[in-house]
Length: 383
Image (cartoon, rainbow, N blue to C red; front, side, top):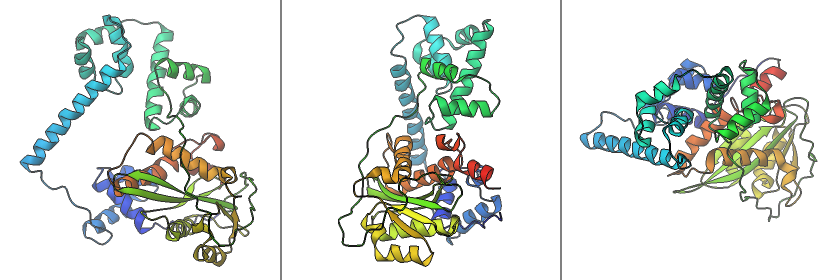
């Protein structure tokens, strides 16, 4: 199958450049994660600085006030880490050995020197204890635990033991699921937990409602047979940010997305247009959504018809009819939104772009896909 030429929207380019300019990401690393050529990404950055895409404020040389602010931020970060260490070590009743164990198990999260100082033990004493002879089994468990922590951190602390086990096996670490689960449980390594979220559907309108063609048949044999779409919202201190996505049921990849401060029909139209550029369209393609006014609007329906796409809508009030799209938003909110609060919409947009385009599509292991990422699954199945 001839690979479809990738088309990147202005918003995609803006967010990619923002990760480099404002977040300090390296061009080569980000290009690899996004599946974009180094030269293309460098050109976007250059154009951005020239104001041809969207100008971003440069950081320049820091003033004395900014230097002092940076110093205070570093000090504040250190105080926060000390507080976190004391909170996590609250279960330690006493004894140097217990403190050493805690330091060993948490040195991946905090500097050893800070751990030792906060708990009142010497750094040299810790390393002497750490380097003492240990049993082969304990040594093996320690090495495995270190690998588990690396995988868990790489997953943005979202993986539970099944995904961690799949990642370890792929990289050549032979171990059982039960052993991984035990080590994670004993060391307090857990995935982010699920939480209930509200819905955004407004089906009180006079537009025609399409038949439910999907009928919860979420298993398809190839890309371009069925797309599912939905809308959600993200709170920021500036107000709501609305997000619309379109996923291909075959590989569960997000092929279209759009973000805006308004929850209007333009939001879903922009997401569909991105999907039309990036996705695979087969004859008889079904687009499934809830029966919200945005999807039922004349403009959105006209765009579907113009591209030969069949419209399918869920039954009223039945979230299970659109379970895959609902599940994606649930995952997004559990793994990214819950526990974070954004100062403004742009901050949230940058975080969501990073989550969708780098983590979810290209890195995150999906249980439905045999613990492959959507992009890896697509490469494996569509050759």
